[in-house]
Length: 218
Image (cartoon, rainbow, N blue to C red):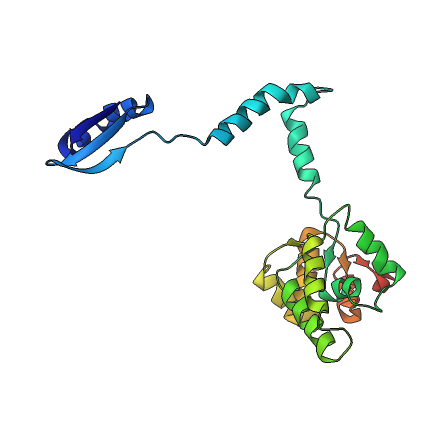
């Protein structure tokens, strides 16, 4: 059913008109004798309604034991566990040919269980490393596309740019670049081990009582 009202009536009786819309009626609003707007109920897509009905009807058939809200939250957070901070040198050792070592391969296997964490500059540093490898003729022109597909599949969590003061303090204290200091600041803040091939960064991390993983952990 469709009803027609003037603008003034629509302003005065909007709540009542919306109640009628909720029951399925349409409301045409006119200025003078010219229709200018229409109020209609938002109708949910049939496939969504069907999906909801199937969820309600079918979910109990899979039940083996009760599940509490606390368990759901715990399971959600299990998927977010982070085991280590990874820097660009370690990431490159996973992707570049001839850089494999038992220590780095062991860390790569660990990624399947607990995703690593890194500052947002990791992607930029990887771009630079890949470009250098191509320019120096160490890898083919097809390597970059392959490398960045694999990088995306590793699901490395982006920790953002970090705390400016912490990064600058570590850079000045240990004579590091702000890039390297960003990884160290993240490890220190999150109390996570740092995976790196960079000896200078590893040395600074030890001074900050941050655990080192990879070939430099010795």
